Image (cartoon, rainbow, N blue to C red; front, side):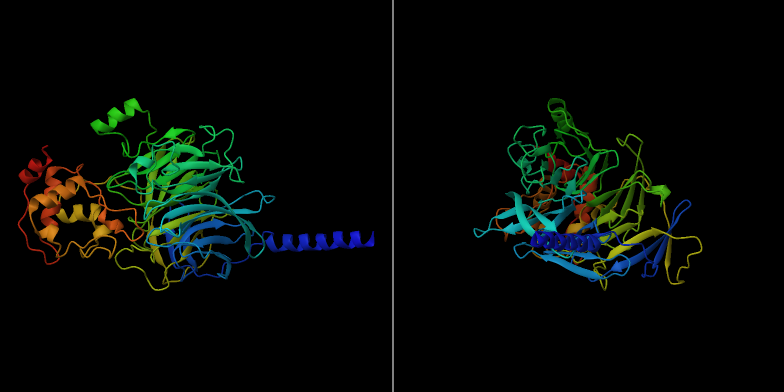
Length: 516
């Protein structure tokens, strides 16, 4: 009897110790100085660096201990105290395969403290050199993650692997998957790629999924990069388009979102015909030229009233933070603001604290940094918070004023069109990205026979995506949606830039190449 009582006491002490280690910490003063300010309509925001010198933080999540938990693409999961900037490593996953967009990606923490689970998604290279994506559940303690349980494994590729993880209000696991660089996967109900999947926390299929025995919740997606639930239980996703139409979608049960037959709003004749035969759900918003949308989170705090009931979206190509305001029903976009363009570089993910502060992770040490990046001490996690009345700001802090997004003007010059559609891959200097996107400077395809160049631009190029060593950049989207005069301007620009010297290509030549 005494031994039983002693065991109960020990268990109680251990449980109490675990509680005190994981309990929410009392708020303390933030130690990081304000580096910049942003003036909204009434609220002044301060921007600070919480932590720096990271290795591409891919997902950041507000943790159960009021610290920021984050994945790094190379295969580590850590947490950082937002007050002090002190980092603690929680887990290293040795079987993560990192290459370009591959690696340790999405993560979600179950909000129920009685279910101490962390769900992560990463790419893995099998012994036969095939690539797979894995969804794994870990159990968290105060200072580590343990007991990995493989919930799902699906085919991967050298690109388009997604992936974000979210927990629904009813406690289910939602996983976004890319089409694995194979268009036909997205609409196929037999494929797990190009979908939003819904699982029970043990990896089984929920009984109320739209297709019995199938993880699929929605289909027709190209490469979802952001996934979040709102306070009303609406699920939103940010998605990469091809050459046009990056999308913001509201995800519905059993919904079909059109890829690869439809891009954006089904505004081309062939898209309209497909939409009439296979009803699809149009995006709430689409961006052309593309912006490469990344992580999203929902903002519903009074701390920054101007942002209440909005989606906060980080972008990679556009290197900006978008504030996307929703209507009360959360089924339409009412306004958009674009902030910090180019200032911090690529913005991969963000999260919102219970107090209404916003944290943003940069992504400048990844495979495709923008011009002038990475900066010293990239990558970083930034804090955006409302300044308190009378709070002092260093004289060296930069100051900005928020502006609404303006309608995109129609581009006509070759230089502007190149910047909008080509520069993210082939770079301002035309040198491309080694092993990913070929250089245009000195490229015989560019300076050679005009017919071959025009055909490539109109029809695109499909590369070998089966091998882990394939040059993923050898794939190129088709730009047939551009007008003849726009393609003529682009081709003439690239044939006479970066030391290239070739004849201009006229509109008539483009028109002739379009003909069957």
